[in-house]
Amino acid sequence: MLRQRVITALVLVSIMLAALSANSAWPFAVLTLLMIAAAGWEWGRLNQSGGPLALAMGVALALAGAWALSAGWTSQAPALIWWLTLALWAAWLSVAQARSVGINFLLSVLCLVWMADVAAYFGGRAFGRRKLAPSISPGKSWEGVWSGMLGVLALAAFWIWLDTRGGFDGPSVYTRLWQSLGGLGMLVALLGLCGLSVVGDLVESLVKRAAGAKDSSRLLPGHGGVLDRVDALLPVVPAALALMTLNLR
Image 1 (tube, rainbow, N blue to C red):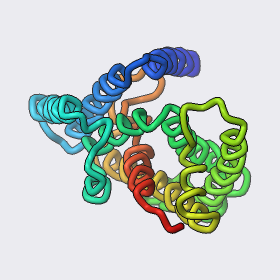
Image 2 (cartoon, rainbow, N blue to C red; image 1 turned 90 degrees about the horizontal axis):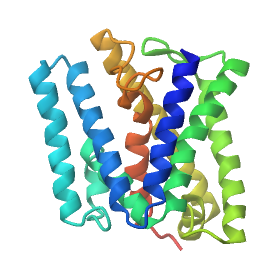
Image 3 (cartoon, rainbow, N blue to C red; image 1 turned 180 degrees about the vertical axis):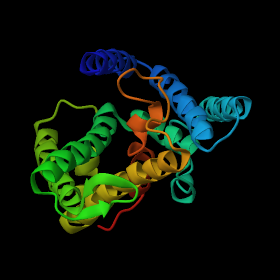
């Protein structure tokens, strides 16, 4: 299982890096659209939709994304959309637009979610006492949540320092929040994004538990389904873009 998991992760990272390194933003947009369409199919299956209906949901999501791509929304979408919905389609649109904002910006948002997850895992293992939502996800604890938030704050400080060194295609989400909201505003915003990552994970866990499923699918050997890998990202990336529209200074 571990070998399969590592091989799948390496393949995914290789494909993702190739798409990110392209001169144009459309290869990354198309790649992530395929992934989110697969997530739409998984969501239909978890909600007890029949095979054809679940497939139709994935196809509809892909078509909606293709329309948004052709309309140029991945480079500049109406800001209000990030406040109105955190659906899969809007989540994909936000990821594609984040790539247009800058690779440094996109990676900093992705790493925020990954750091929150990794730090929460190790913090929960070491200090976890009080269960966060035992009926939904027994392994999560409040201590894990706090550890995840501390990990993200440490990452933010490090990334802001990296931004001062230059060499990137634009500021990270941390530097942008610092510049637009100030130190306290950035702190509140990052804690909120960490909270959203936990919510995204718990919502998918709740749906899987209701469906009696361990994984959303078996599309990714050793990892489960696409939703299992992107559940925490779905609310965070749109929210990060929404925060970019604020300026308290």
